[in-house]
Length: 139
Image 1: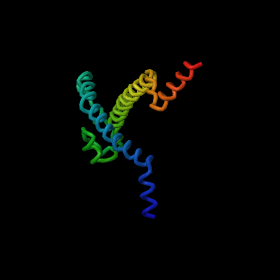
Image 2: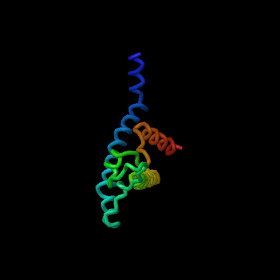
Image 3: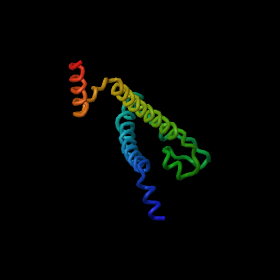
Image 4: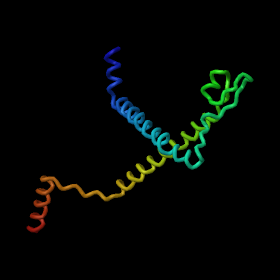
């Protein structure tokens, strides 16, 4: 069973998938930082510091807190502002990923369109060409 697992784990697709997951997690951290540290502060400055993450509706009369963390301690709350913030973050992350993938696809298209140089003939092909030319010149 251990040998079979090792064979499975060392297959090319599994290793490629593992590399993709690791790079994806690192890229996800970069995009999350971009959203949280650069884009959201700009949006906050434009909207006058508007932060939806603390908007909530208490589902019981015992909830009297003014911020979400304290409200959750007091009872059930509908944290619609946090949901709205996370949805906005998702849309920004999805847009950034779309732009990155779009740029990569355009780069691939340019690379595919660029004419490739014809391969240099091998020594054997050169010799065959010389023989052909010699035979033509004798006729």
